Image 1 (cartoon, one colour):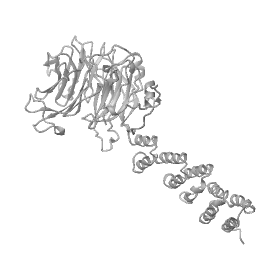
Image 2 (image 1 turned 180 degrees about the horizontal axis):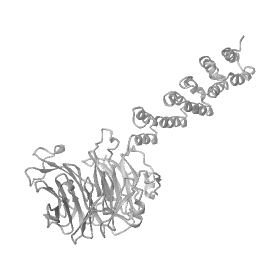
Image 3 (image 1 turned 45 degrees about the vertical axis):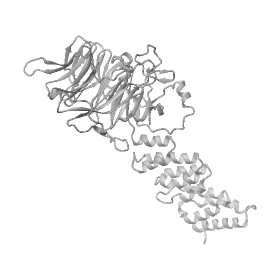
Image 4 (image 1 turned 90 degrees about the vertical axis):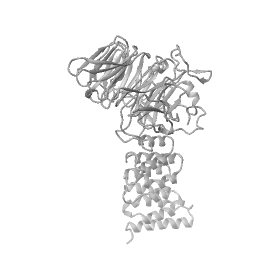
Length: 574
C-alpha cells in the first residue's frame, strides 16, 4: 500500500509509569476521521510507551540532543553537555559531566567505553563503570564520533569529525603516552554523521557518503549526496548498518540501501553493481533506492524492513512539497510519524506520534536510535522473547520507545475490532498466555449477548467456560437474569465440573415459568441426578400451575409427569 493511500493512525501511548496518556487531537484530525471506514484498518506493527523514570526530570531543565542504546544501557546526551546513563525504564544510574555545550553524537563499544563529541570542540571517551575519562580538544565543533567496535582490543582506536571537515582516526600509542592521529579524509566540507561496523567506517560530508575499509585502509565507495535537498545543517544525513554488510542511508527525502560485496556477482534483488570500487577486494551495490514524501529524521532496520522517522513538511496549496528551506514560523509543525516500509517504499503501517511540543520542532530536532538485536522476525512478523528490537524516538523534551507488538497485542486488537472468532482461534492455536482464553471467552460471550445471539452463546459455553464452576455459575445466573436459561440448560454440566445446588435449582425453576418449556423440564429432570438439587423449590414452582384453569390437558399431563419423576427420584413413593 502506498504512502499516499494511507492516513497515519494515532496510537495509544503509554506513559513511563504504565498509565495511558491522553493527548488532545487536532480539530482537523477529528474532522478528518468522519466519513472514514471504507478502507479496512491495518493492524499496527508497533506499540509505543513514553520513557519515564528520571527522564521527565532531566528534560524539565535540559533538552535531549543525542542518544545511543547499548545492550546494557541507554546513553542520553543533552544540550548542556551532560551524558546521562539510564536503564531501559529511564532510571538514571550515572551522570557524566562530559562537555560544556551540546552533545552531537554518542558511540559505544560493546564492553564499557562511551565516546561523545560536542559543539564545544571536544571529544570525550568515558568509562561506563568507572570515573575514567579522556578528553581531546579540537577547537571546532565536533559533529560525529565512532568507536572501533573492537575499541578496547585495538589500541583504543576511534574516528571523529566535525566542522573542520577532517575525518580523524586516533589510535593509542603502544609504548608511550598519547595518541597517533591520522587524517583519513579532508577538504570536502563538514562531517555530519559517522558509523563503524566491523572493519567498515562510513561517514557523510557535504559531498556525500563514503565507505572505508579500515582493515586494508582503502576507500570502497563514494555515494553522492542526493540532489535538490537542503543543506546538511537543515536536514542531517542518517546512516545505519542493518548488518555487517548492508548500510542504509537516509538523507533529506532520499533512501539508499548499499550492500558491501566481495565479488562481481549481481546485487540483492537482481540489481547490477552500480558503483565502481576503489578496492578490488570490496565494492558497493545500491540494492534499494526510493524517494519519500517527507523529510527523514531517522532510519533503522526492522528485520528486512525499515523504520522511518518522518517529519511532515508543511502543505503548499493542498499538495505536500519538499521545501529547500525551513519555515521560520513556529507552532505549526505536524506530528512526527513512524513509517514501516520495505526497500521499495511499500508502506505497511504509519503512526503519528503525540510528541510533547511537536508543534515547535523541525526535522533536525528529532533523533531515532535502535537497540542492538540479534533476532529476526518470523513469517508472522513476531520476535522471540528477548530478541525484540527497541526504537527510541527522541525530541528535545520527550522520548518515546517503540517496540513490536506481541501476540497478546494482536489478540487485543482483534477483540477491539470485534473479530472474536479470530481472537479465539489465535488463543486456541497456542498464542499468548493460557489465561487469555478466559478473557477472550468472556469478551466473546459478552459480544454475543449484546447482539442477542443467546443460542450461539450458550452453544459456546462448554468450549469457553471449560471446567470452571465459578464461571459456569456466573453465566447461569446471567442467562437467568436475561430470561434465556432454556437455551443454556442443555449445555449445563452435571459433573466435571459440578455446580452448586442453587445453580441447578435456578435452572429448573426457570423452566416452570412457561408451559412451552415443560417438555424440556421433564427431559432435564430425567437426565439430572436428584442429588444435584433440592426438589422443594421446583415443586413449589410447579404446583400452582398444575391447579390453574388455564392449563390445557396436555400441559397438565406434562406437569403431572414432572411431579411424578421428582417424587420418584426423591424417594417420596412408598
